[in-house]
Image (cartoon, rainbow, N blue to C red; front, side, top):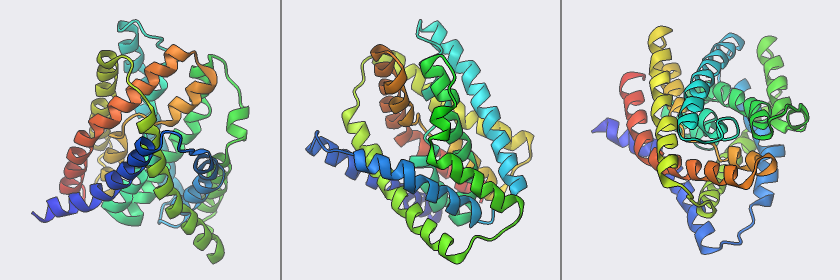
Length: 299
C-alpha cells in the first residue's frame, strides 16, 4: 500500500497542474502563452538546466554515460519510427520528430524529481539535455529537410548546457547566488511548462486518429522497452535506472509541433499535433504503470 501512496504522490501533482492548464485553455481559447513560452525558452529552461545539472550530485562521466543512452534510444526510435511512417504512407522524414523526441522536460523532469529527489532530477536532466539539443538540430533538419546551426546558437538552454558541463568537468561548485537563482528559475519553470503543456493540449486537434494511435503506441510502448533493455545490458540499478526508465516512457514533446509549424507543411503539422495529443492521452495510463515499476524495482 505504501508503494501506491508513493505513486500517487509522484503522479498527481504533475497531472493536476497539466489539468489546470488544460482547463484554462478550454475556458479561454484565446489565452496567450507567448510570455510563458518566451520566459521558459530564454530564461527559465537555462536556469533549470544549470540547477539540475550542477547541484544534484551529477558527475561529468555520469552525464556522458546517460547522454550516450539517450543517443541509442533516439537512434532506435528513429529507425523503427521511419519504418512505421513508411508503412502508413506518411512523410517519414518530417513526421519523425514526435516519435524520437519525448517530453523529457515538461513531464519527465518533475516526475523524476518527485520519484527520486534531486538525484533523479540530475539523471533526468542529462537525458533532457540530449533531447533539447536534438530539437534544435535533428528536429529542425527533419522538419525543414535542410540543416541550419542558427536555431541551436539562438537557443538559451544550449549555452546553459555548455556552462554546466564546464562546471562538471572541472568539478567546480557554482557560487551560492547562482545556485539560489537557478533554483528559483527551475521550480518556476517546472510549474509554467506543465501549465503551458495543458493549455497547448487544449488547443491541438486530432485529425487522423487511427494513424495517430499507431504512432502514439510506438512512442509510449517502445520507449520503455528500450529503457528496460538499456538497464539490462548495462547493468544499471537504483535511481539512475529508474530515472532512465521513466524518461524513456514520456509521450511526444509538444516542442516538435512548434518546430513543425515553423518549417513543415500544414498537413504534416496536423499529423504531428494528432500524435502529440494521442500519445499524451495514452501516457496518462502508461506513465503510472512505468513509474510503479520504477519505484518497485529501482529504488
